[in-house]
Length: 389
Image (tube, rainbow, N blue to C red; front, top):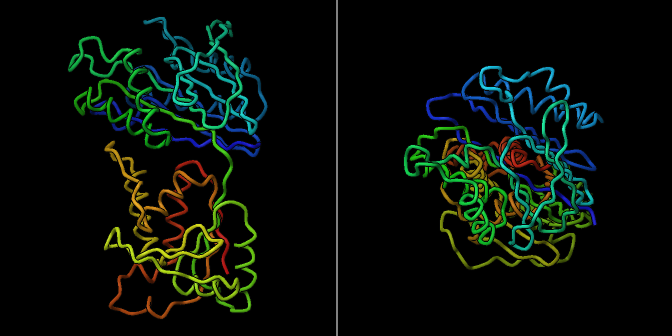
C-alpha cells in the first residue's frame, strides 16, 4: 500500500515581532516528503534569516540527493556557532517519510519529536551521531497507517515562562497535553491549532518565544474528483462524466445542472435531501455512485469561507467544527481531511442565473472561485489540478 502524508504546520510569533524566528520547509515528491523545522537563535529578523537559511539549505540538499552529513556540514560552514553563548545559530528537526511509510528523522537541539500509534505514544530509538562537531539524534522506523508524527520548537516547551508558569510548560507536560489531544482528534490541522492554542493561552496571548508545531499523519492515498458546472460544448458532456465515473477515490458533483447531466448519462436518479442543517447553505442531494452531490457556486463559496477561516494566519487558534453535515461543511471536510489530492473538472458553460445583476457578484466569478479554493487546499500540502471543459 502506498501512503500519503497529510501535513499541517503553523507558528506563533514572538510578541512584538513581525517575523517568526522559526521556519518550516516542506517538500512533497512522488516517492517521499521532507519536512524541516528550523529554530533560529533569538527572535525577529536575525532569527528568521538564520532559520530560513537552515531549513532551505537542508531541504534543498536532501531533495537533490545529498547526504545528511553533507547538508549539516554545509550548515555548519554557513552558520557558525555563536561565540558569545557557545550555541548553534539554528537548531533543526528533519523528518523524511517515503511512500511506503519508512521514516528517517534527524534532530539537533530541538525538543524530541513524538510518534503516536492508535492514540498511544511510541518510544523512538535514537542514535547519537557526531556530525561536524554537532551531536545529532538519528532515528529510523516503519510507520503504519494512522500513525502521527509531531515536532515542535522549544517555544512550546517554554510556554508560560514568567507569566502563568514560573518554569514554563515543560516538555513532559506538553507531551501529556498533546497525547490527550491525539486521543480526541487525529486531524493534523486540528492538532496543530489545538496545541498552539494552548501555547498561546499559557503565554497570555503575548508569546515570549517563537513557537512552531508540525503534525504529520500517515494515511491511505485517496484522491477526490470534483465536477463543477457543465462543459461549454455539450458534446463534451459524456467525456467529462466518464472521466468522473472512472476516477479513483471520492466522486463529487457540484451544481444542479451538472448533477442532471451526470444523472442523464449514468441513468442514476438524483434525490434532493429535505434536511436543512444550515439554512444559509442549499441542501445536498444523493446519487448512486457519487459520494457527494451539492448545489454549485453558493455552496462552494461557503466552503471557501470555511477553508479561509481555518487556514488563516491571523493568530487565531480557536477550535473549528467540521462535523456538521451541510453541503459546505462536508465539502470543506472532504478537501481538508478526507482527500489526499483534489482534481477539479471545471465546466465553463455560462449559467443564466449567474448573470442576473441582482445576484451576488461572486456567482459570476465561478472560475476565480475554483482557483481560490485550489489555492486554499494547496496550503494544506495537497496537490490540486484544474481541468477546464
